[in-house]
Picture 1: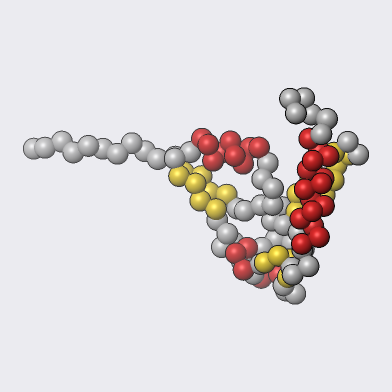
Picture 2: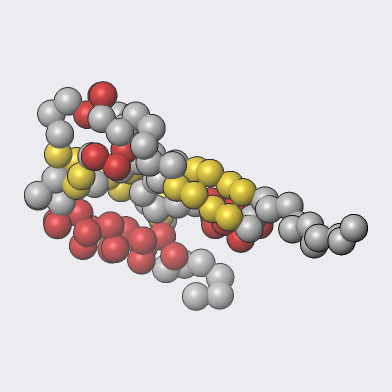
Length: 107
């Protein structure tokens, strides 16, 4: 009778996608063996899929990427795309992020 090697158990994590993940999101990824982004669930409006908030010297600031889809309610996350006019957001979001870390220690 031969003893076969038993594979060690894997630690998986499954999360939904979000715009600008928080630190804990990366901590989860770092703590597991396998990570999946589960984007076949229903897209949720007014949620973290296409927006995030950051702390700035002026208080909390929302960063939102406009999406294109008239009826987003019944679409899975992976079928909702950024609107064609989202490019102005990219620059303003970068500026907001720079303001957010400008006065942070260690910068």
